[in-house]
Every structure is written in C-alpha cells, then in structure tokens.
Image 1 (cartoon, rainbow, N blue to C red):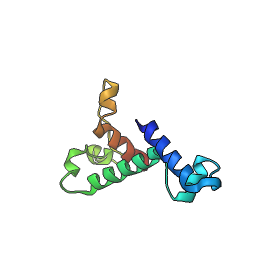
Image 2 (image 1 turned 90 degrees about the vertical axis):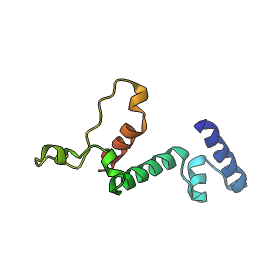
Image 3 (image 1 turned 90 degrees about the horizontal axis):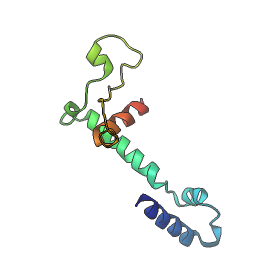
Image 4 (image 1 turned 120 degrees about the vertical axis):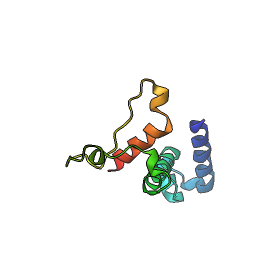
Length: 105
C-alpha cells in the first residue's frame, strides 16, 4: 500500500515538473517534499516526543534507565524496551515509539 502511494507521489511530481523532471530525489527537493517513509518516521518521532513531554501520557512510557537505577549511566536518558517474543508485538506502537525516542537521544 505504501509503495502504491509513493508511486502516486512520483507520478504527481513528474506531472508537475514536466520536462524539468530528472529523478525522484531531485523532484522531491524542487517540490519541497520528502518521501512518505521519512515523513511517517518524522511524524511518529514528533508524536513520541510530545507523548514523553505530556503529563497525561508520560506515565504510559517506561521510566528512563537513569530513573529506574538511580545511578549515573552513560545511557541514562534512554528508555528500556519491553521484551517481545513476536515480530507483531515488536512492531506494535509502544516498542516502535520507544525505539524512535532512543534513537533520537
């Protein structure tokens, strides 16, 4: 489904730019767009950061490693990922958002 939508975006860039179209990457720069995958990752990261800062939803996330051990660690700002047995659970929202948060720190 994502590939189909990406093809529509490619086709739209090709139509908009006409003869100026050379390749997809330069067309995205000219149109001021980004790939759908990058856009999705950035939106998820933005959501995870807002979830972390919000008083309402901060309790849904596990504590940082520094908060849980109360020691000074090198990775004290990262959050511990839950142990998952299946790929489906690993790709569910909470582990995915925690990975994005940990990667951004």
